[in-house]
Length: 230
View 1 (tube, rainbow, N blue to C red):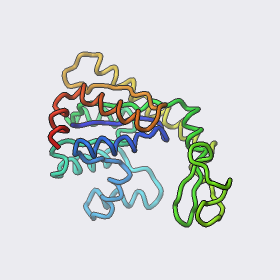
View 2 (cartoon, rainbow, N blue to C red):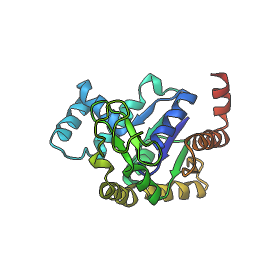
View 3 (spheres, rainbow, N blue to C red):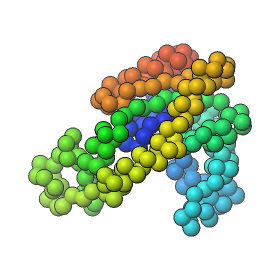
């Protein structure tokens, strides 16, 4: 299975990607993890990526694509892979296509912007331990206090409403067009086009997980045999 999971920040795509990888025995390839591993590896591409990241600049697509090809050549990708957070834009998707990196299925976890803001801006953490809460879904026993220590909980800067809305804007400008790209490619009838599946991510975590796995079984029939034998 070769898959891409798309969705806005906070849609839960990373969590669902973990479920898929565990069930079907394929590695999750997330751009951030890949870049950090490459930088630590000391490879030529990793060294170039690290130099760019160290000055706070964006790593060019050409280096990203080179690292992707390098990662896909490893033995653990023999049964497939799942991209989480990649590609991020149309040029990256076109580059995958032009390099002959085929994908079986693209899964979109669709969640309304208002729900994304609600989920992310309600997060609170206990800095010392990393324990997480949510003002609605998982509130502490005492408002604003860690259950174990009684210390103050904080909201990460990334979870502030203004920051969340800015991240959503970037998503809609750069990444959301991939959904139209992949769905149009499938409709074209091209035999190389991946299946496109839209999953309603507004439900519970378990319901979304069941929908994702059922969809994968339907669009990639060989997965049924693989998963049932594991």
